[in-house]
Image (cartoon, rainbow, N blue to C red; front, top):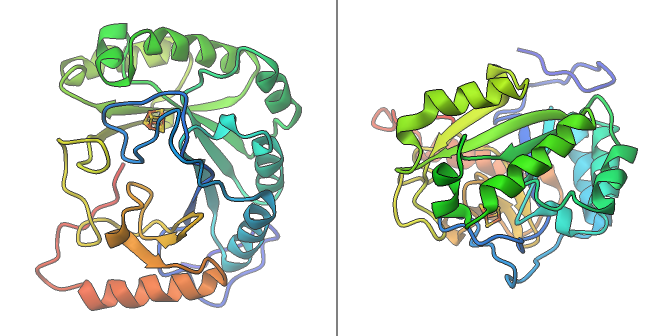
Length: 270
Ligand code: SF4
């Protein structure tokens, strides 16, 4: 398989890892979900990546052949310069930003509308078709606030994906949740349903680590990690972000080192 960059130039060899690149823009959040793998909350240290660093990451990622950049947190829309980050990235490569959609009741939505383009996708976390599917984990009133924000984004014409975390509160209602999502005009292929992961605040869910996760290179202010599900020290690849090519090589080398016939459980974590 030959990967191509947006200018359609073939690369000499395909990237040895997932072509998704994740960026943790910040760790603070307006919510404190009880299953948050990032341990985010309103007073969490921000651990912000500066705009200039983001631009350099995007430039190198495009050069290396990454085909999609995903901005996550914390809640990225807490940051004042998230719009410039997204505009810069989506001008170069398909770009997705993850959000709880609760902060679009003021000027933020207008700023986002100003940078809207066909390569920008908004991924909204929504765990149900009713408050009782979501509020036990994400906070009282959170479902309604997310649905309100989602409605504003849809009215503004954004390309929306939904992300649902399966929990004991909603696992019996996944069909109903999908029906609700279809009623919003969001297609099946734009809906991710993933299990709980036992990381961060979550005391339950899948045990995840380098042994069973397909690497999806992830960057935060402290370095480069194996996968966006966790930036715990055991998933650190290297403390230096640049050059990104070095981190790709290290992931590949580590993948080869830990791969074995017994390691059959490695899966892409959706
Ligand atoms: S799961 Fe998402 S919305 Fe909830 S606290 Fe963590 S970052 Fe914030």
